[in-house]
Image 1 (spheres, rainbow, N blue to C red):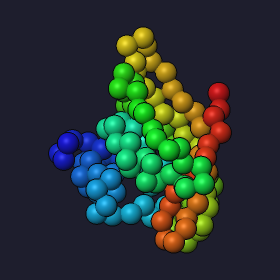
Image 2 (image 1 turned 135 degrees about the vertical axis):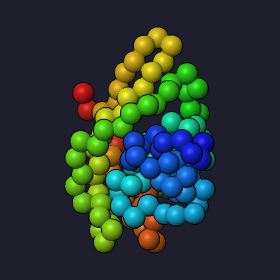
Image 3 (image 1 turned 90 degrees about the horizontal axis):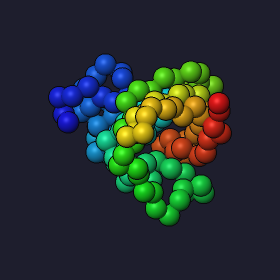
Image 4 (image 1 turned 30 degrees about the vertical axis):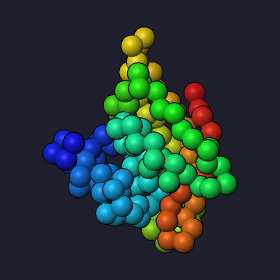
Length: 128
């Protein structure tokens, strides 16, 4: 996947963008960057990364990704906080997918916290 465009639609290659976070060669500097890398993890089927970046107080014991759901586009609608010198933030997004039965999207406002220098997904509230 190294030379392919990153699923988060940053315009960079996967290796230069979210892939380096997935492999531990880098860390998210902002809540939005973590959100983008988590979307990419859904797109490439990396459940281990999703669990590792989920806050321990809200993380499920296991995560079973739907192989029939193909995530193909992420639109960041708004961010509040979540900067490199902050400890919490909210990212509102809409993520688009295709399944054998059709297309759809998920609209969510996700909360993130930074602890020990690392950003974690805390929880989210789904929108329309």
